[in-house]
Image (tube, rainbow, N blue to C red; front, side):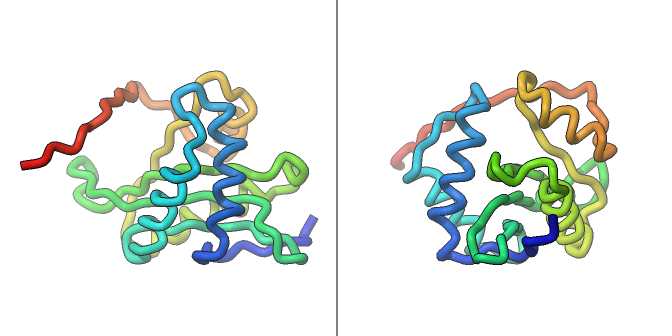
Length: 156
């Protein structure tokens, strides 16, 4: 299936991206869809083109059918940028056609062009199709365990 192109997301794609994130967040137990938060997060990514990138798969009819994002962070272990890969999701009607692989390649190419020497991502431990996808794509499990802590804004 080559009835799609991979390109950078645009502001007007945000509603479609939120729909894709809804599908992803209903799979992942650690997240709950929150359209206002997702909209704000996508806006923040789009406002930092030097440090973040959202790739979209766009059907020939213009519809957004998949997405993936990358953000640069400094890795002291690498002494260089590292890329956090997130939100890799393809509309259920378009899976198994190489779109996820193309999206992943796009965000990895972007990260490498910005000087990143490593990429990492998190995947829900119960999302077996995603885990299999990443393994087939050459991603390796690490011995690191993810921890999470919510932060509260404090007025000074």
